[in-house]
Image (cartoon, rainbow, N blue to C red; front, side):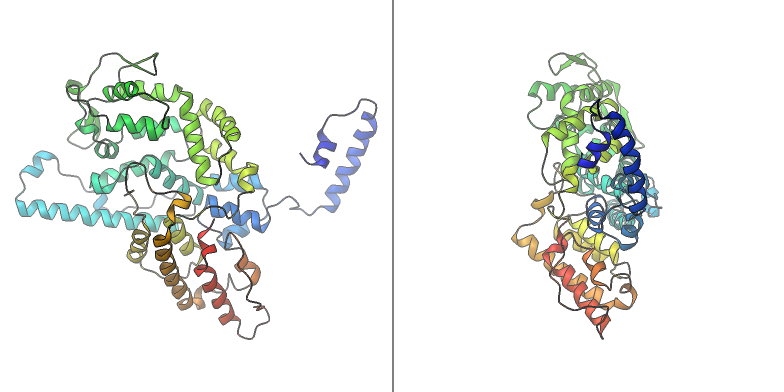
Amino acid sequence: MSNLEYYLHGPIDSIAQGRIWGLKSVVLAVLLLIAPVNGWALSTEEGKHLLLRAGFGAQPALLHQISKMKRSQAVNYLLSQHPSFAVVPSCVNNKLLDRQARRKLSADQRKAYRRSLGKCNREFRDWYLEQLIADKAVLANQMGLFWHNHFTSSLRKVKASQLMYQQHLSIEKNALGSFAKLLKAMVNDPAMLVYLDNVNNSKAKPNENLGRELLELFTLGEGNYSEADVLAASKALTGLGLNSNYQSQVRSKLHDSSAKTIFSDTTIRSADDLVTALLAHPQTALHITRSIWQHFVSEIDEEQVTQLAKVFATQWDIEQLVHGILNSDQFWQDSGKMIKSPVELVVGSIKIFQGITIPTKRLTKMLKEMGQILFSPPNVKGWPKDRDWVDTNKFIVRSHLMDQLARAISSNMAVIGAPYCSSEKIASLAAISIPSSGQDMETNDNMANSCQQQLTQLVTDPIWQLK
């Protein structure tokens, strides 16, 4: 609380009460007269920071749009934007052949079928990248990526974009909604059941993959469960697999319906019971809150995380949790201390410089070279985070790719230049301003060349990779 806020709203001495209440009216009247309409609005630096973390970069139009808002209003505005759910490639809606139908295929037909699945998977990845670039719901899309990296599944193992698309829709629907609903959806998700081998989890031969990762990565976090808990969770998940239409189904003959004890004193029998037990465990709210905090803030504040987790556990409202994190003092004091992921680097650059024409397949290749393939994290722990994205080799690859971006900017200056060609606007694009070249573009005789030089200098500087 500032001195002025304390003076206006803090404890009042009983003797001076009458004088202070009178003075309050005068002070407030004067403040309203002398303060600009947006006196508490975001500064350019604050708006830039918010969009670098909660979006994919400081797009000039969006930065201008939130510039008249207070911090909380800007956060609310980003939270209010919903993804467009663009139409997927037609192949994603094709019906998958069941096991019986696949057995009837000849060897050549099976090869052709597998090739068609692989081709569709590539089209599906390209579609998602194009969606991230074109869609305006930047915070919802950030959270969608977060959950894809939390509830990991991979096309490399699942192989069918039809199943991954179902999972993607569940994530998009609940990315800023109810964690309780999202958790239940992921436990019963066909792609997840394939990825973590729960289709092979039976009463006679329990498979612990989904049960273990559910506890270790998806809810409680490492060190907050026992091996007995893993076994109980896995037995509760027995029989949960896919029917002939690739929808999740509990196969009763394979399910262990006996009473299992988890967390020492909780009895569970089914997957639904397990989800209920996980949501009742205090470590779940802490683990999820800490994970989302680390997505937006470079350093953990355990006191803040604990306070936010207590509120989160009452309703499991993800939007409310994100709102609390983005309105924390720690968030607003954290500018330029995190590393952009490859997706943030590529998507953010294209969203900012909208006149750039780089084919989607080339952008997908760039992501792959930097180590991030959409819908295919390297393992169940997901893609790297923050500083883990950069080592000597990865930095060299990133630098080469940013050189390509610089060339694309140079080639398209006639289209993209106008919104950026001032020192102030260029400074608003990166987390930290790079040293000035000393040229004033407003008075430079060769303004276009100067703008081009400064933009290419900006995107090839390591600072461009910060957020």
